[in-house]
Amino acid sequence: MPELKHEPATLEDLSKIMELPLLAPELTDEHVSAGCSLAKRYGLAVVILRPSDLDSAERWLGSGVALGAVIDWPHGYSTTAVKQYAARDALRRGAKEITVTMNTSKLVSRQFQYLEMELLQLVEACHEARALLAVNLESEHLTEEHKIVACRVAKRTGADFLATPDLRDIALLAQYAQDRLQLKLRDAATLEAALEAYAAGCKRIETPNAAEILEAWKTRLASGADDRFVSSASLGNTQATKDDGLRH
Image 1 (cartoon, rainbow, N blue to C red):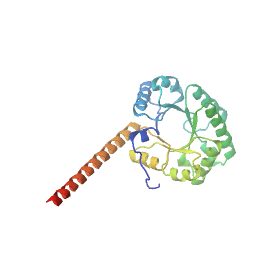
Image 2 (cartoon, rainbow, N blue to C red):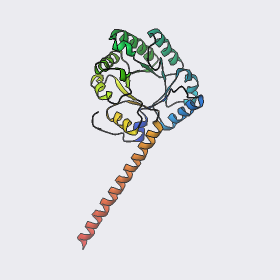
Image 3 (cartoon, one colour):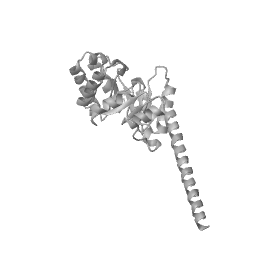
């Protein structure tokens, strides 16, 4: 990973690019409702839901936070027709962002035209509804070459985001995204991982630990402000002492 070039200046700078996934099978309606409330409270960018939760979530979420949905999750092995129907159904139910995993078996089999045609249809469905498409990579099964080809395919089709769960992928993918494809880190577990992703240029950071990360960042920002105040006060006292010495 590259060295950290910059950090978010405010809590909002970080919160507005964070996504909260509510996808675990054990989550109840109460959990999803609480997650939507948390997302509103912290001003997150997106809440990512299971398609069956979309109808209720729009009521729980209200405005201000985008409603996202996954289709054919987590592996993306269904046919193109099934994915297209699922995407259009989610869009009709209020989703503004769709996440789909690139078919790993087709990628490693070098069926690139298949992947490109499939993503073109999904991008078209999303953009017709003024929604965004994020393409997820199962990085643990891919070589560097696969990741580069996946990036090029996603870029050619006009997808909005390319997502990876591996922070080490970001620098590589950024070379080929060329500002035409935004990058997303999935599953940032800690504040340090989120800050690295931010510094590397990620436009979205997905994490189930959004609240903990943002609270940790708020504490660090406050600590930094206190340190600057103390440093400034100390400098002022030192200067006052020097001035007093000159008078004597």
